[in-house]
Image (cartoon, rainbow, N blue to C red; front, side, top):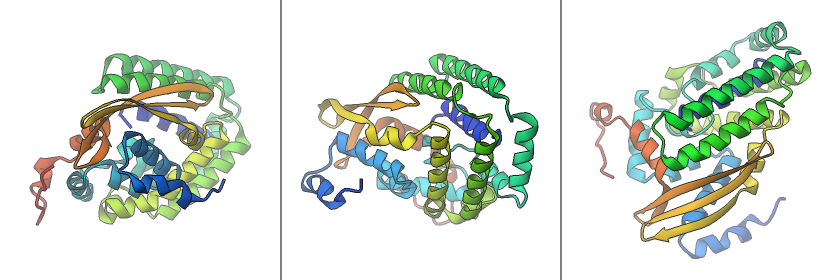
Length: 301
């Protein structure tokens, strides 16, 4: 998730924390196995991975193998935290996990909440509105975004602002429950800082972060922000395809607001990838650092 959008999500999430069908899956997937997945199929799979908190699968299939290998090495060197940068989990995650994992985290966070935010409904809603206005203004004129990203994120900021102005962030009981759930989930990751993520490596880190991601989504659902429902009910359609390039339209609702995204895609070695995700991932790989990694051969794309 791009830099300007991540702070909005993170701040609203922290306000909520600190301020507070089973179907026959094999049969459903059989048609996909008969023909090579197209652009729509690939977007559906990425959303499915996010619903299932499968951060490992999301990372491995979101970029070509050679680029994945570079990102894996960059993670171990501490120079990249992709794919967390594509999700509502940004570079502040290690510090957040460390704070939530402290032995007295529940008591400390609950005290902070009671002191500053309990019952402060009007103030919290005003803060959400101000933050949304500033983020929307930034998105319209700043940052390294494609035109499609800007259009999508402006709508997403509007939805999140709408949610933040109505969410029960000032309710003490709900906040206490959220704190208990997230501190427990953070401790189960075993991560207490940046070095621990590097030592674990990208795959192991993402595997252990998946349940935390799922718990965070469930906490936000309790506040009326249901990402899984948005992923599950998204309508995806092919806008156009010409050779190895395509565009897909995704329509979904978040916090009662309709959102539409147009996603450019490209086919590499027979597989479809999201163009903006590829661009973000390539910017994270830091080849000048990879070249210095012991025994690391840089594969070409």
